[in-house]
Picture (spheres, one colour):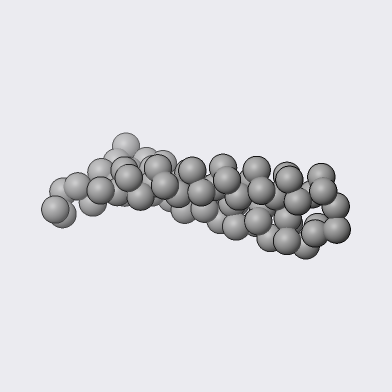
Length: 68
């Protein structure tokens, strides 16, 4: 289930970046484009938190599967 959630987050991040690029090129909505890029960066950080392994080599996503 967490794999699906992380995949949706990654797709949402890509859509936010494409939308920000569109708004930036269109002009006039620079603040909204910057906020979309900021939100995409926050999503990327959350994905990294869940998938990057610790020094022992275990990622938090692997520990979630153990709890189920």
